[in-house]
Length: 460
Image 1 (cartoon, rainbow, N blue to C red):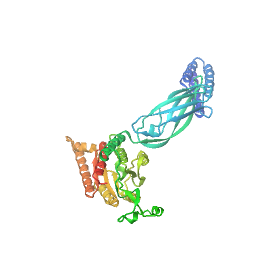
Image 2 (image 1 turned 90 degrees about the vertical axis):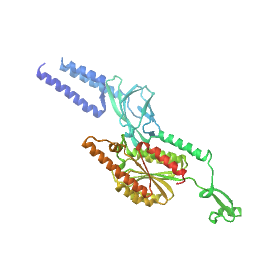
Image 3 (image 1 turned 45 degrees about the horizontal axis):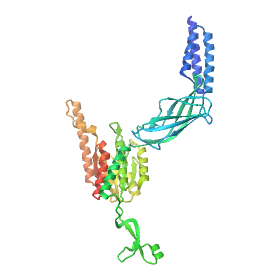
């Protein structure tokens, strides 16, 4: 072939593919691997005769287009899909999700689907093939393992429906949104809750004992006797019975536990691949489970430069569910925490006595001064317990035996940072704040143990 013939051949092939790409992407008509092999054969035939190649290409384009038109398409009378998924997921725990594909056409539906999940569930997934018989159904089961907590809405499928000849495919999108909620790890919390429940039974016995006293939990009505408080007289019962009736109350043993989470900049740092806030969330979750098992009221507040979430202390599973919903969505932000505003808000919204567990961190005296200067606004109703996380990496650097000047500088900086942190924690303790400074991996276990200790000693 002459150079001019080669140039004409390459221009023809390039123009053909360019036009097809433009038209095909706009119309949603795609080539299958079989169609591409056929096109490659037509291109080779062009080496012998350019006219034969053009004729073959036109025939192939018509076949691909016709094949894509005959393919089953999503719609009211075509393909449909429904999802059967758990109401919520847990970080690091596998869950199974099944899909039911329905084919309302009289042709076999050969599909290549790519699932588009919310980002908390993994985002875009690899494509997989599904065959749905004519006027039939097919089930597709996948495994979902969330990598992070959160709540997002979205999802759907990019579906390539392959035609009967296998030469062309029609691309469509099926919207199948879901409200995906991914909670912090629940398995450890349930184990911790079972331990707390067993300890509670050892302390109180298998049946709860009621104590009559000056509490505000109504127990029964009885006849008034001299010496009873006149404020407890039930005037409606008195009028109904014709004699003085008084209310008798049960000493209320239920306490208030408030989980206060600082989501400011100090909680954004990572330890072993997890943000410090993730360790805090796990500890708060286990404490919420333990408090619920002890029949205490549980609430939560999250703040940074302003209050982001607040759930008043409540009792039972409903309260625990609301706390879980908050713990699932909070994220650390690179802002300074507003302690004065957060504590004023908390003091105004919760006026009952409560164990207020503040999950935060301090790195120097200035941070602890801001906390101590405002924690007094919570007293006397709130018993503040500050939970801070150690930094294992800094402690490892401080324990080095340097042999080079660079290592000696790192060691001195780490020692200075630890010294400033210890000074800050000591300042908080002297101000009357209970401080629990623990390693991130042991935060959950330590905070539950301190809660149980305070209950046993009657500090709540």
